[in-house]
Amino acid sequence: MRVSLLAFPGVQLLDVVGPLDVFAEAGRQLGDTNAYTMQVIGLSPGPIIGSSGLRLLPDRTIEDPDEGPIDTVLVAGGPRIQNYPCEPVVQRWLKQHAATARRYGSVCSGAFVLGAAGLLDGHRVTTHWRVADELATAFPEATVEPDCIFVCDGPLYTSAGVTAGMDLALALVEEDWGRPLALAVARELVMFLKRPGGQSQFSAHLAAQSSERSAIQAVQAWALENLTGNLTVNALAKRANMSARNFARVFRLEANMTPKDFVEGVRVDAARRLLEDTDTPLQRVAARCGFGNANALRRAFLRRLRVTPGEYRRRIEDAATYVRQTTPRPNVLGTSLSSGVAVASQVAWVPLDERGHGTVPYENPLCLHALIEVFGPLAEFASRLDRLEECSHERR
Image (cartoon, rainbow, N blue to C red):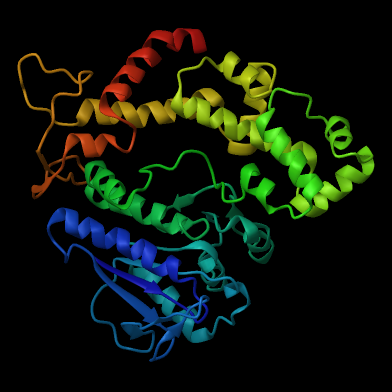
């Protein structure tokens, strides 16, 4: 399958090499380096100077004659790509290949180039959180979903900021070859197979680090350590030795959010970690993170992640259950999953076609312990699943 990635001057190089490395690793896992034929497309011959100043040598240009059908067309983004003039020749090239390729899409702000070519109209899309509003304004016929890691809408695939391009590429690998291969690639590249939650590049914890005013920083750090305390604006202002009105003004100026948004964000982040790592009932999660009750926790999750806490936890459990149910294990007498003794040294996978029928089988060495590294040590992982099943009725 030929993957062509269009790169402009000033491109964010990780938007290019990140997704391509995912496809390359898939080929290595398959034992077929030609499973994906990758090429970087430039506007003109010669090196492409990236946003970091590093140079990328394209394989070909949009002016060169086609070498064969393109399966997947992607457009890489960059810090100022939305200001880059989209020349008619670029629009023609994109429209032509979007019409003939199996799928097309963008990484990060590359969505602006697709929009200029009219390829976003009528579709659900996403992009880097910082320019999501700008994309929605520039292309009102598109529905921009700013919190998504990536969005698949028909043949159009768009991803959020920078590293989310790797998440998108991993999803495409899973679409092409199935979940076991995608999981193996994720393990090798130390990635989530399915990153939990939405686009969280500007989480409350990162916001706390962005403030340069020591008084505000001190209050933020204190709030992170005292989630169950009184975190109202008045209480935080008093701790900063400022009036509530001045504190709110300075906080918003320094942290780019209101104190209320910050507090809710750090509490949601803490709740997410508890839901991912423990079987603590929802009511206790809410209490430990300062929400007071499960209803307040639920409302905050819906506002920020567009998913309920129960559904968020189920998604994590579903991924873990999949590994438990589908990982091949040797049939050894007295060996159990919870003991962590059984180890599969070789796993043979058979990719499925669109009807669920097996295609050409391939083999790849895969240690069960290494596979479970994505979710935690094997014995702890299995024990946690057992505890989750026992207390599921309590959470509901």
